[in-house]
Image 1 (spheres, rainbow, N blue to C red):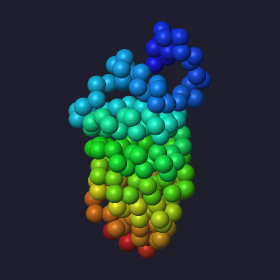
Image 2: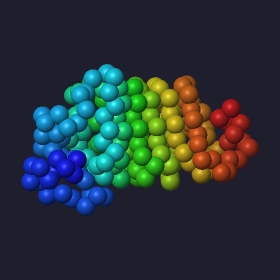
Image 3: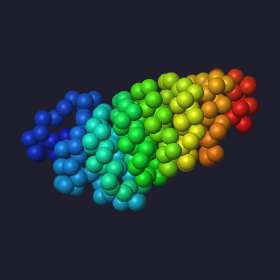
Image 4: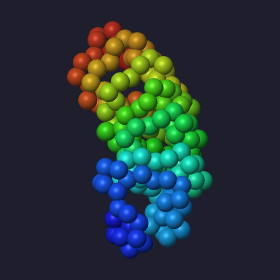
Length: 175
């Protein structure tokens, strides 16, 4: 990506500040720098610290198997766009922060979702995650009864990693 910017005279942002906006997304697709988008492809956007909702809307038109995101903070508007994308896997990096109600906007997503480490998970977000139709994989340091009760409503595979503490009542709810 850096070589592409250099070749086309685009000012290269600092490594942590790569932002994918609509115009850059369109240009990268036109110049075939992003992989061919089809059902067998993973679109790896993990190099971008931020992706504008307009760029997500543009890319959501494409049919691909999975999307890997490196965005630092997911807002509710972008989460709603991602929720409507027809994917098998939506993969967030460990350092993604979720704005309040962003996780709730993923409610009803048809594919599988893999979250990195979630620093904060409330009951409303847990209930929303339980309504994702596919596998839900997340990493949290602890689970209380209220959160476990919300997650327990999930009918698919629920993978919880990084758990350091769980109350025995919360564990019973999950089981």
